[in-house]
Structures are given as structure tokens and as C-alpha cells.
Image (cartoon, rainbow, N blue to C red; front, side):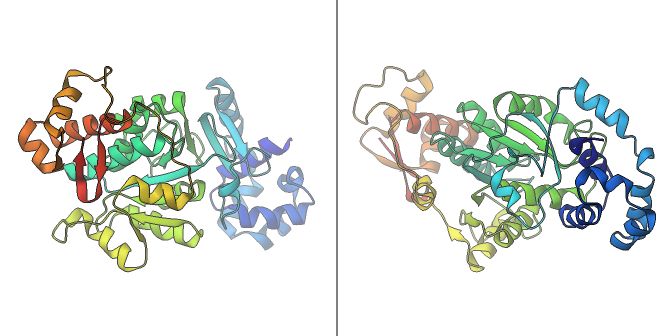
Length: 356
């Protein structure tokens, strides 16, 4: 039995994490011999239920798992591989196996963007703005492909032709939520979709905190867009702190229920950010103009972009003012504003103001 197959089998058995793996490896001498340890030795290391599963590993369905991995052309990275993501490997509980569709780069600069599944329009627009603009600096956006903020961040990154990674809380045969199957495929083509769970694992509630630790573990820092007090995004933020990652947070209105978690994190010491520059400067990324210079004629603008550009000409207006003047929805307006900023036609200012 080779090392990779052994690790896939061990990963199928719930309860064997990186810590227990090291104990088993030490007892067996190497990974390949772990499956052949004596029942007594296995029971001395693992809880009884997990030990019994390992002793009876031939009944785990591992052969079918291996067949599906090959048939579906899934790349499996193990904690023993050199191209396993470096930052994730440095955490206290890295997954022993990662199922991957797409491309992962071990030293890629990643930033996690997460938030509530029930965001306000403001939250969606901010997720799109930050994801799109940050990706234009070559930063890979990592999120959890959940409804709401996560999906908005992924889609905005894809639209901006950036790289994004989706970490899911189930096996690849049970994409959750199901309406994101197409998004899952698009991300795999333009970045990577990953899971630590064997292929048929269902999206159990207990899986998502485990997924969240991977989001923060892959990332140099995590940005909380909008999160309620009980949002899973707060779990990600706290895990990021435990992993010695920086946590950036957008401030929220005091009466916005979906943002109370943001203000709580700021009280706890998270970094308050108001614009992209706050993050870019903190990460030490050199700014580069990637499009035309302000003040030049923007021949590549769409009709909708020209309309917004004319409204802002010589002015500095708040986001809500622009909505009133143009009649666009908050989501549509933010997409246009982001595109204009990337083209160098406008500049975003603190507190959601924009100027041409």
C-alpha cells in the first residue's frame, strides 16, 4: 500500500487528524505501515470507536473511493506532499488530505473573504467591491462558497478574471448548497475548489467549523464583510486569530443586525478597514496602476459606465446619492463602480464616497 492511498484511507476514518496521524506514524515507523499496526497498539492511541474503524479499514469503501478519484480526475494532496499549501501546513491541525479540483499553488498569497448567508444589499456590494479590487492586485480570494457573502465574493473575483479558491464543507459528491454546483465548476476552472472530506461526505453542521479553519489557514489574513453575532464568519475570525492570522473587518451601522458581529470583532481588536488601500498597505503589496490614467479619455467604457462617470464628473458623491441619481440597484451600481475604478475612471474614497 503506497503512502497516498494509506492517507486517503485514514482520512475516510473520522477521528484521525494530523495529531493522531503523527502518533500512529511514530508507532508504525512510517505512514505505509500504519494500517498494519496491531489492534492493541491502535487502541492505545485512538478512541475505541475510531480504533475499531482503523482495525477494520478494509471495510471503509476505500477501493470505490480510489476509483472515483481517478474517474473524476480529482487531485489529492496529502500532508506529506511538497506542494501542500505552506501556510495551511503551519497550522495546529492541518487536514491530512485535500481533495482538489483546479490548481493550488503552495506559496500563493491568499486572503479570506467571508460573511453572513443573509446579507444586506450593502454587504453584497462590499463583498463584490473588495473581492474584485483585491484580486486585481494578484491576491487569490478564498471563501466557503456558502450563500450570501461567500458566493458574492467568488463571483466578483471570477468576473474580474482573478483567482479564487472555494473550500466546501462536504465531499465533492454532495456540493452544498446545490444551487452553487455551476459556481463550483467555474471556480475549479479558474482557481480551485477543495475539501478535506471524502467524496460521499454529506454537509453535516459539524463540518463547517472544520471548513472555516481551512479558509483562514490558507490565507495570510481574513476580511469579514458582514456578520451577525451568531454568524459562522465569527468562527472563521476567531480561528484566524488562533492561527496567528490578521483579521480585517468592515465597520457596520449600529442598528444593522447582520453587522453586529463586525462591531464586536472590532471591540475585540480586529483591524477596522474602510477601503482597499488599508489592506494593500498592511499586506505590503506594491500598488500598480493596471489601467488608464485618471483624466484621460476612457474609450473602453460601456454605456452604463459612461452614465455613472458623467454623474460623478467633477463631484464627490456618496453611494446612496448615486443610486438616487441613476436609479440603479445597489448591486448593479457597485459592479459598475468597481469596473470604473479598475479602469482608472473614478476613485473610491473613505466612507463609501466616489469621485471622478
